[in-house]
Length: 102
Image (cartoon, rainbow, N blue to C red):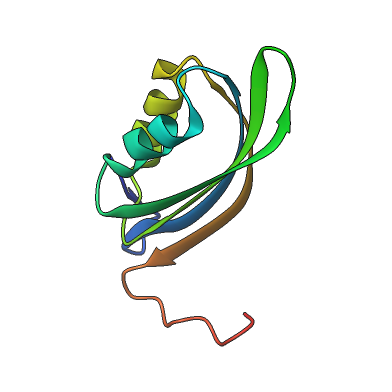
């Protein structure tokens, strides 16, 4: 299930900013490609920190209907862990667009 129904209509996820900890291998490019392959989404991966065995990543995912559950599964399949969801943008199907800066 990629969207939810809050009782007032369908709600879709359009943007996520995630804090992810992953091992060095597979690399960040392969990690980003795997996430982007989940649907019509854009993925930006930034390495924030590295130690001997792991990388801390900021992962920004944008799209019309992000399959969050599948994103979580893909992260786990890579041996990584989702530390936090730092930003979320969701819309209801009947929602008006946000004003600039909103």
